[in-house]
Image (cartoon, rainbow, N blue to C red; front, side, top):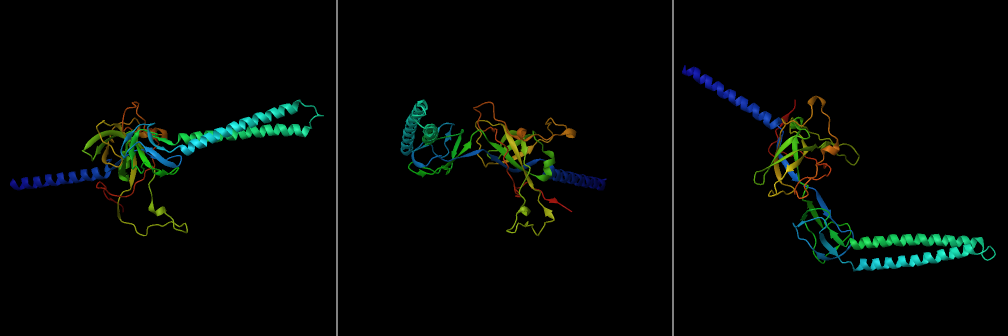
Length: 341
């Protein structure tokens, strides 16, 4: 009796171990979750549209700014002088046009004995030339006004100042970035899933996002799936020949596919910073409203994130197109080798 009990317990333990091994194999290889996820955000680089000395700097690094706030000002003395010169040119061209038009009207009233047809045509042409010169002067005036306005650099979005490379008194050049703005309502998560798990992921599926920062749980949904990653075998040499890797491992890691995840609701006290690490779990059992037999891929416009209706909501995604993020083959702890025959 005791011998039979030992055999039974041994069989039970072996069965439990096999079941646990199969469950772990399926969980790590096919269940749609990954620890390789990062918080992302839309970043706008700020560069002056005109060159000059910075006369005033109104922000510090990491400051929060609102759309329309003045970030810094460039000395406008030269641009004010250019505007006055353009205004004077316009006045001169207006007077010239008035003079040419008066001459053309007066010569049109003269008889053929008093003026030749050639002189009459020349007067009309001079009038048209003066009108064209006036239009050019008006365009120069508009450009001078725009340059003067652009000496005040304002924030194009709500966000936080990042990597400020500027101080009052510095000289800035047109088009050279001097700071970045992280858009405060554009945070999302980019998860990099192994290709063995992609069959369980579809657009619209709910996602549980767990930030490494304080084990914070956030809810979201799959907004889009990346349709391409880099392939080292496609790089070419100087003769435009593909540089195919000479070795191939029998045991190989599954490629990782980027999946964009929109955050549905973010509490106000939750700190989000682009680059944070997160673990994401996709609820593959949830009904996304699509029949498996008649599944139709959503157009790209539906795979973008929607901006929140509440303008005060912070750290919610905006209507920016899905970025073409790509992922490499790095294994961050949840990658399970996939064998091939």
